[in-house]
Length: 145
Image (cartoon, rainbow, N blue to C red; front, side, top):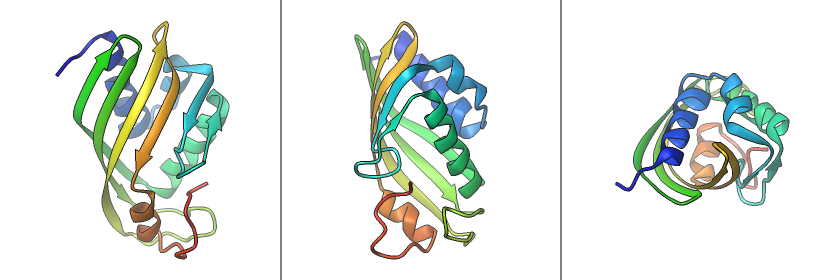
């Protein structure tokens, strides 16, 4: 794999923010004006570190068991591409959807852009439909938030 300083930042991001639930890492590694595209599903854009923190808190509450495994990662200049597997267990409410206890593993692909050691943009592509099925969402629901 082609790795650089930015790939190490992205590895740390997934390990600390998602696996260890260390939300203070958001303040350290995410730019204040960062944009996350499609994090909650198609068209769900999050702007700014505080909005991202709120989304992370909601996902942590809904999926009390969450673990990301980096399967592939490479970095070129200011971009990092990462392929992950996310194991999620729906243990808390997801919006109006009560906990089901269902567990799923969903594939995730992200392309991130970094500047000065911080993530400034992230394009997210993950199987939101599988996560929503684990939460027993109605078929018409296509985004998490």
